[in-house]
Amino acid sequence: MRTLCTCLLIAAAVTPAAAAPAARPTAEFHAYQTLDDALREVFAGADSTWTESWTPDDGARAALAAQLASPQPPGEVVFHRARAGGRDLGWAVTTDEIGLHEPITMLVTVTAGREVGPVRVLVFRESRGGEVRRKRFLEQFLGKTRADPLRITRDIDAVTGATYSSRAVTAGVKRVLALVDARYPLERSAP
Amino acid sequence: MPARRLHRWLGALLLLPLLAVTASGLLLGNPRWLDRDHDPVLRVVADPVRPGVLWQGRASRLWRSTDAGVAWREVPMLSPPLDVAGIAVAGDTIWAAGAAGDLVVSRDGGAVWESLPGLPLDGARVRDLGVGPGGALYAWTTRGLFAGADGGRAWIARGDAPAVTPTDRVHALHTGWWLGPRGKLFNDVAAAATILLAATGLLAWRRRNGRR
Image (tube, rainbow over all chains, first blue to last red):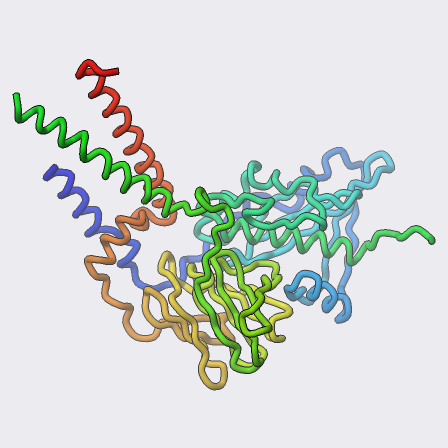
């Protein structure tokens, strides 16, 4: 018992969590996958690939901001596209979303049927939470559409210990779904 | 051997409070096990500009009332702060900070929200957020006072961090933070193992004493 108490007291004395000085966690940089590798994976079997760029004007950015309740950063959005045997494989878009301190760069795929396809984490810069790159987490997004809540604890389970990174990836998927719909609106049938 | 018997009986009796303390600690650490919609209110701030508007920070998100608190609606945003511990309002600009330091800002009265890089807390917690004249932003944290710069994009520690007391160390040990963010998982596993050991120990003791 005395040994146990001594061990606990020593552990409490050396615990770093409460004692460390205030400092922003050192930014780390983990490039898990290059964009080219990720595109080859998500568009496996494609016989032609190309890119289409779009720079949303102020009106389009305002509309996106209103839809997402989040500002759309200025600048060009690149849609990676692919086709296999004449069949459209959809769109793949890279986006950055802040985790807790740093942006996470991810590639989100949207199928021609407007469902979320494979999602890949390309660059992770936080000191913790890199587990969001794992398949088990990312596969939750497969088949989601804009009609789904895409919300942590509701239809997406966050990775334990990586809640903020999980939230950022979820936000990125939502943003890309909105971008695809804004740039390639569904054709409405004539009345 | 009356001493051994007394020891066994005392041990068996102490099992009950031990089980109660361990199981309740486990449940307190995981409130969603009992209440799936557990979403406690952590902060309420009256909007100094818009009459009747109140902002409410909950464990999951930010909420707003436009009728002085009669009805509340969740504020939609792409990356909502979690465990909202601080809300500051200056005109049309509203900041909300999560306990871990995650930060969002709206510059149009709450329609569009931008995620900002969080406060440099590294495991410490935000206690409150305040804004002074001219939009001077401050955050009170378990690491002391931070002053916001560039509208909350950068933070500078003001003064010394509060001294770490023995109680802080015991708290870190108790909550698992001495092992970092995964310490809670360690604590949960340890609590579950304690319950299992106590229950199986009690069963083994009963069997040894001829009871089944």
